[in-house]
Length: 349
Image 1: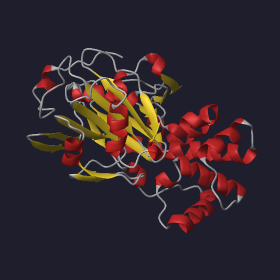
Image 2: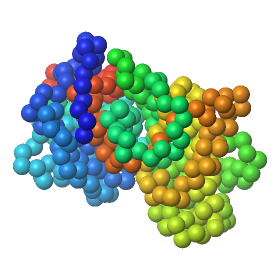
Image 3: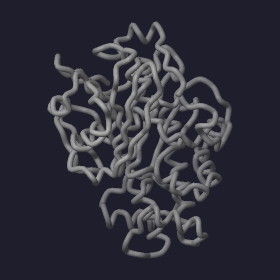
Image 4: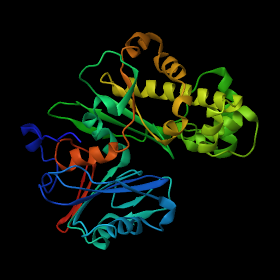
């Protein structure tokens, strides 16, 4: 993994309550999503250790999941940084797509930690973008690379998004987002029947209802007229086999993701590029329709020419959130979240 350098401006910015991570200090890193819980050990003077992965369903709570990882290690870490699929705000937190809730300070105490840092999973992943090498991403469009804000979007169990502002600059920082819960705004007349079908299920149609693993199932059911939703892995297998309805569902998924990403690119001014990640795209593989995505991404009226200059990449690295956590705790990138120590709690935006 590339090194994580801290500039003088960042050192003076008060990035963390306890300062950057010290060499030799062991940290537990975690990437906790709605489906999987992944853990690794990290130290500032060495690379991230092997990543262990468990189905989140194996555990009744977040402390149970952390304890399962710690039991695989020779010694328990006294510091942990957790990237979790939830809105990190307030002291009592609850995951969006998993029935886990916890009090931040009680979690620190239960795990026996001197320091606990919590950030949204996509905040951590966005912080990791500068740590990607050329072989860590697939170029969907070269565009006109340059300095500027970067955007990360990922359909998985939910639909995550975060922006990396002033990427590469002295004021580099991550802006958290819950953009996946914005109202669906597809304007193609062909989508009216889809909108009605989704409203019948959930009343409100958010982008996450369509651009997620479950959303791929919704799009497939829309194509077939079925009442029950197939799981995303099954649909991905049908796409690979050339099933017409599944291929059409994947094409619509790609097109809608392009429309959503293009709108967010305009909203954040992400001239530095857009990166795509997430389990649904990993599952679709070659079934992801790049042409449909880019056509919808660029279809922004008077801003179409500008959109066509935006670089677009698809992340191939499986440890993006861990790279981001390393940059956050080492002070290379500011990020919203919570730091809990024995001295108290520090919530920053």
